[in-house]
Image 1 (cartoon, rainbow, N blue to C red):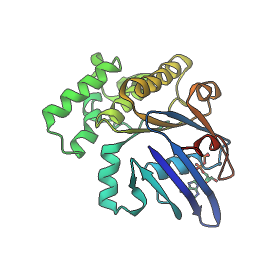
Image 2: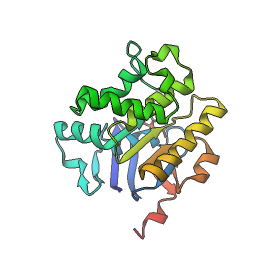
Image 3: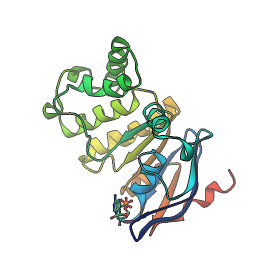
Image 4: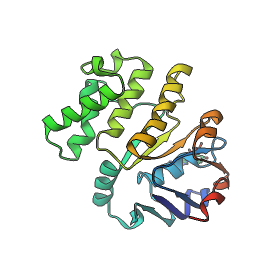
Length: 225
Ligand code: ADP
């Protein structure tokens, strides 16, 4: 479960997050929507420990990540959180299989075991025939699925995605969205997805609407938790 308490964040004079409270229960898929500049990415990065809030606390599975040191944070991030971005950030000189293995190597998984797991995830995502292709030899949809496999390899409790389908055509977008629901239902993962796609958001467990650094609506369903 993710619990965000009274988070604020500024860049210079600009206050980007003005006091965010949010609870995402385990095993749910929440979407975050709102106009550009609302603070969606900043919030996602704070939940993902990529950025520190000015004030407030973030708890993930009961652990207060706001008080962890850099080393604890990077270990926690690598094991507990899978990221999917709009741009895949795959390393161009490595194959699909090697790219997917990277977080497992960082988590000190032995090479053989990491490769076995990477193959299983790539197979699950329909990419078993693309293991040795480099990102430049893959289609946009395939690249994004490799990025999803990379996010999954350490079996993180939480998947955070920032406009993951923003760069995809309709068919690949729909496939990716379906995959997110499968991750929730089959792997019981908790997902928070920043999206501009209202029809996808409408299918998620809750829509968090942000504007000007605040949650405009969608947060109130959390108050009872
Ligand atoms: P959204 O994802 O809703 O479009 P962001 O969280 O990306 O919003 O950005 C919110 C505001 O913070 C924007 O005005 C953006 O320009 C600013 N911002 C984001 N990151 C930085 C940064 N690293 N340095 C300075 N300003 C930033």
